[in-house]
Length: 170
Image 1 (cartoon, one colour):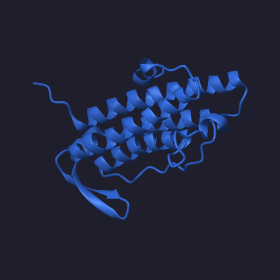
Image 2: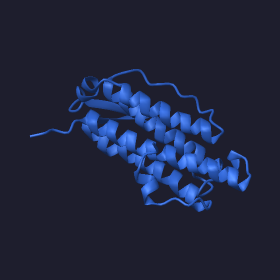
Image 3: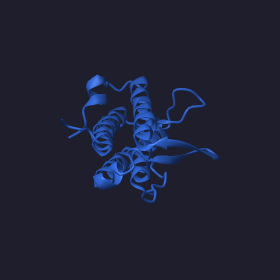
């Protein structure tokens, strides 16, 4: 009987989802060039005034995976300043987050599968077992912010399909 570990799920999901997000950003950059507009025209777009723009959606997706891996492994949080202003910078952030998550030792992540962690939620913390933190927080937020980034690019006319959301860039 094969057991799927928390580390395997985290790493596979991060590689697939952030890899696909990277691919969408590559296409977004090509689209901006085709339209002959600065990156910020597309990157500052938001679905609704009180929602984050495309840049912030990508940053949060990357942070969710990387910080989630660190928290599960009991490591210090990686520091990624939110300074990206171009498609290449956001693509690099996706690559950095994927590399970080995949570089964390499986054993350190899996050691906290059934351990109750204190997850910061604003000024408070929420106790969650490692496996619940993965399934109910990390993956949920990773997919939410990646899907919003997809929707923001689609709304601006970029021809993306379901495959772009599901298949990592090569």
